[in-house]
Every structure is written in structure tokens, then in C-alpha cells.
Amino acid sequence: MALVHMKQLLRQAQAENRGCGAFSVGNMEMVKGAIQAAEELNTPIILQIAEVRLKHSPLHLMGPMMLQAAREAKVDVAVHLDHGLTLDTVRRALELGFTSVMLDASTLLFEENVAAVQEVVALAKQYGATVEAELGLVGGSEDGSSDHGVRCTDPGDAAEFVRQTGIDALAVAIGNAHGNYPVAPHLAFDVLEQIQQRVEIPLVLHGGSGITDRDFQRAISLGIRKVNIATASFNSLVASVERYMAGAEKHNYFDLSTAMVQGTCENVKRHIQVFNQPYQG
Image (cartoon, rainbow, N blue to C red; front, side, top):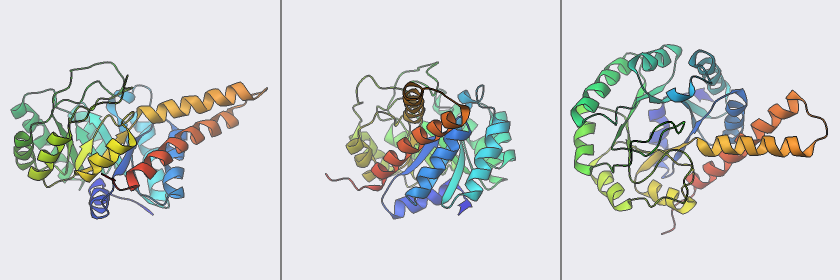
């Protein structure tokens, strides 16, 4: 239907009491697979890419492709820069036309995080773009290259952070982590509930791959509106390619491409279905 602002999708998800999937992509096949899944389920999604992925998937190539796919999709799609590490990258994403950006300054002191995010909010306002920020420490990193540990978001700090920065969505740390979990994490739902009571804007759950379906739905019932999925999609793509390579006598690029699209689509569809279902406490 249209390329839209992430804020619009999160408000819609809030009104419908569901989560909006934010799916990380790294190539054309992942973009196609995510859009196909969203269209088949008639559910809006967020396409996103993290700055750590840009060495393999350059922004000047991925960005226009993501944006055009969103414009031509049969459902509403927002395009988001996830975990931006520098203001320069945030600016480049906005110049390309991304409708949402995030500068991850969560490892900084509270005051420094606020100052950095305020600068992004001022910049994004010039483009009418949505801004996400993170408070607390979500474990690991998008590419597994670093881990600053896990520090749960303080509910009082969260309210003050939102007030001072003017952001549109807040990523919280409640025991979640990026990458593959050895076992399903134990999420601090009591902390999430306290944050929800103090913060009016939509909340974001990073490190979604590996969280149980029931925990996803419980988190959504407590104010999570954007749910990030990255590792699970990459893993599903690889598994689909492995099945293709093991099951055919002769291989070609076109069938390989189809396998990548299918692997991504299957994972995105599964998560959309989970996010659309209400929590049964």
C-alpha cells in the first residue's frame, strides 16, 4: 500500500493490541521474502537494517531497494535504521528516505545518551521521521562482535529519558539479548510492567530471536509494540539454502535465490502470526 512512518504502524498495533514485527534484512532475497510474508498475511511490517551489517550490505545499495519494496508493497511498510552507531549513518539513512532511525547510545552514561538522542531527534524532525532509542543494556550485538552485558532498564529513568529526548519509541532491556540464546531467556516482566505504567510511547523488544511465543505475547500485552527479529531470519535462510543444496543434483542461482526468499518468508510469517495472537494468561 505505501511506505509509511514507523510511528503510524506502532500506533496501529497499539490500537489492535498486537506487536509489529521489525525484520532485519541483508540482501534482495530477504527483502522479497519479508514483503511476501507480510502481503500473504495482510499485515504491516517494518523492514530494517543495523549499522553493523553495512559492511556486508552497504546502505547505498540496501536502502533504495528496501524503500522501493516498501513503496510497491500491498501492505504498509516502514523502513528503519536499526542500531545506528554514528550520527553520520543516521543522516545518510534519512537522506535516502528511511522513515525511522535509531542511534544506539545505550552504552553511554544517562546524560550522554540523552544528549546524543536529542541531536538525532532534532535531525529526524527535519525529515518527519520516527526516532527510536534504547535505555538499559540489551545483551550481545547484532553481529556477535561485542557484548556489554545486560542491564535492565530502570522504570524511573525510562520516564525521564522519554521526557527529555522526545523520542517516539523506547527499546527496553528486560533480560533480552541479541543473537542466538543458549536457552530461552528469563524476561523481567515485572520491570516491563513498571515501565509501561510510566511511559506512554510504544516500547520495543530487541533480541527477539529465541524468545518463546508465549513470552512474546505476554510482552506485547505489557506494551511492547515493535519486536525485532534478525538472527532467526538469517538462520532460516541458511537452513532453506542447505535443504536446497542437499536435495538437488544440479544447482543454479535462480533456484538458490528462490530458496533464500522462501527461508526468509517462512520465518517472517511465523513471527507475524505469533505477534498477531493475543496473550492467553
